[in-house]
Image 1 (cartoon, rainbow, N blue to C red):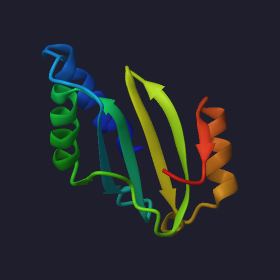
Image 2 (cartoon, rainbow, N blue to C red):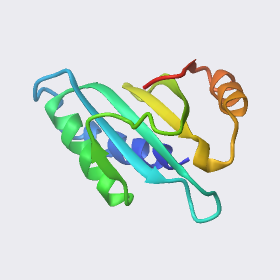
Image 3 (tube, rainbow, N blue to C red):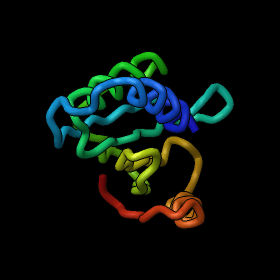
Image 4 (cartoon, helix red, strand yellow):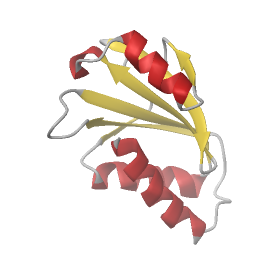
Length: 119
């Protein structure tokens, strides 16, 4: 999943920088799944300090994503919320990817996340 690539990039960027730039920011990144997998995903990061917010935006654009304030609800199947690497992340899946809500929910629960039908 591309949000994992973004998270790895963020962890590298944030591990060497100051994380005290404020707090509470939310950033979403919408991106195509991959050349082999149709559709889009959206990763929404919550409660970011100023430095982490900048790092998320930069990593998103480097991975050909589109930065926004929140994930879209158009054609939304649902979102999987979890904490990884100190980031509170919701990964949202859409009906354009060929999966069903039940498949995405099962994958979320297997990964230890919490499934919801809204970002």
